[in-house]
Image (cartoon, rainbow, N blue to C red):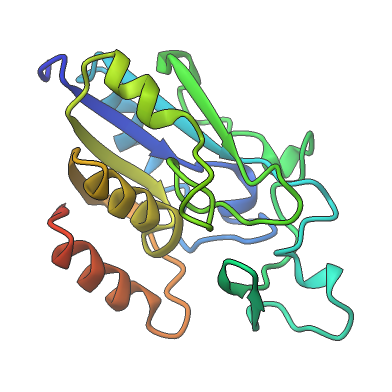
Length: 202
């Protein structure tokens, strides 16, 4: 068992991000058994869940003529336009049935505001609108977080960067993550995480 000051944050292990889903990450389901095993080592386990309204501004379908994976400018900066995914209440938004959700004490839903995307477990993409996770972890006495899940180069990386910025010791277990790797996004994310002091382990 790890110290009580350590928390496991499991990012977006949902049907739409696993093979067969609307925004499938290659091998996304391969990490589930390892994640389930890790949960027994931590006193604090948090799951995050992408939770979008159908009219979400990050969906290419809501921008006539726009192609999925193209970039647009939003008030908070550049935004990738994604295929419609993890729509509130759909099977795609549900956790993968293989994930052991019973071990979690908290589920953080993110991306439910239609006008702003939310990759990080801590903040929406304006880097200002908080999810409340920071306060929860501090009230539990957590000082160190280990991050796993989907996808390495987006929601995992953004969460790790915010954790480090907030003063948590942050570790990403890359062997328990899978990446989208859109136009070199994985290498860029790894460089940014290392520069911010995030530990990358297998």
